[in-house]
Every structure is written in structure tokens, then in C-alpha cells.
Amino acid sequence: RALQDRVFLDIGCGLGDQVIAAAEAGARLAVGLDTVEVNLQVAAAHAATRGVTDRVRFTTDTIPTFGTDWADVALS
Image (tube, rainbow, N blue to C red; front, top):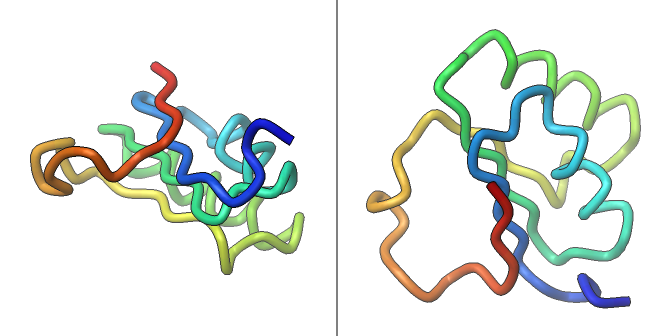
């Protein structure tokens, strides 16, 4: 319930497990940032398998790219 309709950010998301779980828990948007592109490819495939691709984004972009005050919950 804590993530319901919230924007979730995982910095250093790895294979995206927390990002996918946040989407499954009702996050409006769950974003995973990581520097390892192959991890993000695996994460995206897992998100597709779990049926949450409409609510997740995986990227190598840096945090300043997004500006400030856009995530409700951040995890690192």
C-alpha cells in the first residue's frame, strides 16, 4: 500500500528485482538506474515476463538527467 500510485526509484538496480516488485505492488512508475547495460536488458526481460513493462523503466541515465523532486520513494 505504501507504493500505491507512487513513483519509485532504485539507484543501482542490478537485475531490477526491487523495481519489478514495486510495480507489482502498485507503483505508478518504477525506475531502475544502473551502469551495467546487460543487467538492464535482463531486468527488462524479467519485467516483460511479469507483465509490468507499462510501469517500469530501466536506464543508464544519471540522476541529474531527471531533475529533482520527481520520485516519491528512492532506494539505493
